[in-house]
Image (cartoon, rainbow, N blue to C red; front, side):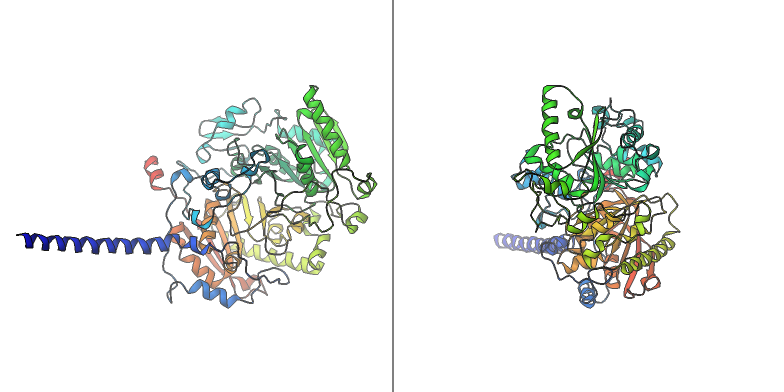
Length: 617
C-alpha cells in the first residue's frame, strides 16, 4: 500500500509539474505578445540617422530596411493578429508624461515652487502601461462644433469641481446631463466677447475687432482656465494656444478640447515652452496666478521670447489696479522689470494693462551697462525648445530682423499662403514652399474623397498633423470648420517657426513619448511617415499606436500615409485597437514624389470596457 501510495504521489507530482510548465509557457508567450513593446521602447532616447529631402524629412534611402523590419515578425503571412490588454477604468484620463502618481512612485525630487511637478516626466519603458485607455462610464460621441463651444456631455468629463469653485465667475454651469459654458472668466464675468472688444478698443483697433484687420492672428493664453477667451477669439479669425497645467483646477484643458477649442497641457516652470521664438502677436494672462517676478523675471522673459516684434502682453490682475500695499509693491517691481526689458505700456484701463514689445534692438543697445536682465548669449538658439531650460535673459533680434523692424508678415489670411521670411533658415526657396503648398492641397482633396462616405461637414473639429513640416496640410484645411495642432518632431528640421509665420499653431514633440493632452481629444490624426520614423529611431511602433489610440476620440479617424509594410504592420493590431478600415488609396495618385507610399484610413470604434458595459446595463 505504501509503494502504491508513493507511485500515486509521483504521478500527481508529475501532473502538477507538467501543468505548471504549460501555464508558465502560456504566460511567457502571452506576456511577450502584450508587453513586447516595452522592450522595443528601451532605446527611446537613441536616434537614428536623419536625412533631409527637398520637401520633407526622414528620407527614403533606407525604405527597404524599414519594410523588412516591419515584416520580419510574423514570417510570410504578415497578418497574424496582435492583442493589447485594457487599462483599469481608473486610468480613463491617463496622461503618461504628466502623471503625478508616477512622480510619487519614482520619488522624483522636484521643486514645487518652480512648478517642476507640472512639467513633463515620462515613464521609463518598464513602467509604461501598454494598454488601451477605456472611455469613462456613459461616454457619448461629443457634441458637434459650434454648439460644443457652449456645452459638452457631463459623462465625457465627469468633473464638476470648477462649476462650484468658480460659480461666481461664470466659467461653467452643470445642467442635467450637460455642462454649459457661459463664456465667463475670473476677470470677465460678463463674458469673453465683451472683454475682447474692450481690449481691442483699448488698442484703438478698427471697429473694436481684436484681429486688427488681420495683423493680429496668433495668441498665447497662459493659465487659460476652460479656454473661453480663446474660444471667443475664433470668431475674429484669431487662433489661440490656450495653455494650462494639469493642476488643482481639474481638467481645464480637457474641457477646452472637448469644446473644440485649441489647447495644450503645459506650464511656465523651468523649461521653455514648446514654441519657437516670435510665434505670437499677443500673450494674455487673466488672473493666471503666476508670480512674474520670480527668478529675475524669467517667466516674463519666456513670454518675451515667443512674442513677435511689436507683440502685446495683456495682463488682467489685481496688481494692475488694486491699491493695497502688497499689490502696489508688485506693480512697482513689475513695471520696473518690463521697462528694463524695453516693453512700454500700450494701454491701461480698469483691471487691465497691455504692454508692447519693441520692434527692433535700439532700446536694448541704449540700456546702461550692467542692466538686468542681460541679453542672451549670441550662441543661444531661441528656437531650441524641447528639454531646454529657460534663462533669465532677453532674446535680441538678428541683424536682419533688427533692420526689418517687424515680422515682415502680411495680414491674415494672406500670410497662410505667403512664403515666410524664415524659410531662408532652412535654405528653402519660395518656389519650394509654393510647390509644397500645392502638393498638400491635392493630397488633402484626395483624403476628403476617401473620407466623404463617413463624414459630414461637422464631423471633424480637432485635427492633429503628427508631422507638420511646413504646415501645408493644415493650410489646405482652411475652408473646413476645423483647427489643426501642427506637431513638428524634434529631430527633423525645426520648421515650426514657419508654421507660426503662416498664422497656424502647433508644438514641438518627440513621438517616442506621449503627447501632452488628455485621452480622447482629437477627431482626426494625420500620420505621414511617422511610424516609419519611429522605427528608424529605435522606438516602439506599438507604443505609438497605443498613443494614437489614446488621444483619438471614439469614432475618430486616422490617415496613415506610409510604406505598404507599415500598413501591413498596423493591420495586425486593428482588432485589438478596435479600429476598422475606412479606405485605402494609392499615394501616387496625388503625388509625383512618393510613389512607394500608400494611404490607409481607419476609424476608431466606440467601445466600453467590461466594467463600463456592466454599469451601462
